[in-house]
Image (cartoon, rainbow, N blue to C red; front, side, top):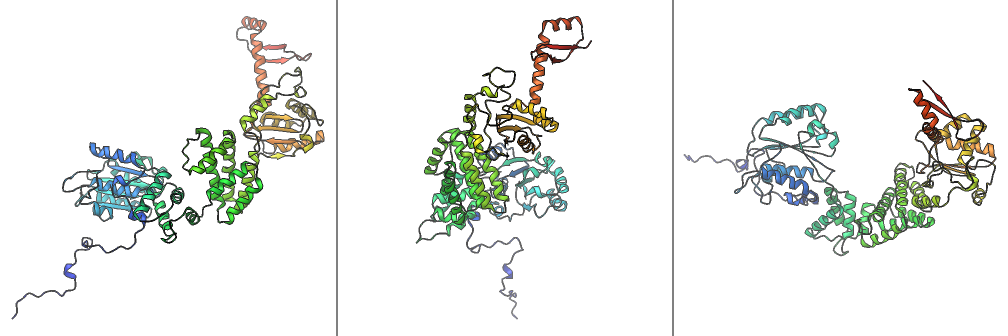
Length: 599
């Protein structure tokens, strides 16, 4: 009888290990791997744009001052989860030469590969977006008290931690306050403000920065070289701009961009990438801005329509216009050396445009475009809204800048015909009624009952119609007509910025009735038989309201009375007496006063 032990059938079962512990000696070919995964940083030196965080962690590890909890925050795709895994590797680093926490991961340690693959038994990753309840946190907390199986620390990585419920955060607090020595927590979130301050105060926080456009473009260029792909740098810059500082988004777009060309066609060009991204040609957008600012309204509208027909999104075009106006403002404020992140020829064109605009004008253009961007986003017809935004730009470009308007008003004081009653001819109108720094009305200011062109063309000093010639005369007219409600509103809410027969500009107070200008224009039409242009502008630097002026004059009269020798003597003779008011004499308009005293 053959006593040779029976051998198991060659079914492969003898080579099988326990599930979860068997790792094949040679991993199967994973096929194509997207760039965002293929070029995920494997050591801290590979992180781009996060030098402050790396420096802080390096110093802390070298000094042995390792925190028990870290909070990583930043926009999507900036590297929060990757950084968390690198920190977990650094905490559990062990090699033949080093068996201590180390930030030097150039030579992979014993646990590095498994942690990088999220397959290490002592490094637990949890997505709080899908596991938000207190039960999920309690499951973690029950395992915290047990020592790690093979690594130095048990590391808990919780992604999107802001999604945890209030009860889950409360359950976590005690462990975060007094964690076991072998446990470390690493949290990641895109919404740092939603994390309770009680949790934040127990963590060492790192804000991962958006990657600068130039730095991200350089990174994409390096990856193209490693992939033997040829893409124009201008196209890579477009990708970096569209990614808005997110490395993952940039690499996903680069994946798509590389296949836009072929070896026969040559490098992938910027226009190809622009078409891929659905962006309008920025050079043509700059043409559009230049045409609008130089009064070529028809050409600007044609250019906008052409960009739209070519696939340009009105929202993107408006944002590009905003970017260019911002660049113009930086050139104007910082000079030609301002870092704009644009091509050399674009910078030259921007500098030329900036020379023709004042900083005040550029600020006004920025506000128009900012309002226009909301209009384009919310309008039922975005192209029509973009058209109106371009028209407002063109109209604003024809107006003098605030600085120039101030110089014009300062060089042309009020004419004798507009001098208030009681003042000698030629005496300037009070600064409170016609401030030298008054600004012109913005193109978007509401206009009520516009004055006809012949009325606007009257020579200086001539009154083209019956009616008030100064703001003081307007107040007097309101009192004569006994329109108490309108008079009260004008005296209380109107800061006059410019007044001439047929036209009145004012800065409204915050509580000013929105229909005040319309009511005033309607009344003036009834009383004078002429149409008045009443313009309300929040940007106009108006003077005192009539109520403020009246109060100021009263205080000045009180002060003059206090300095009067007779009044001073009377107050000395009657201790405790107080000046209540000072009234003008009815017999004349001099400043003689009657003083009331109270014992």
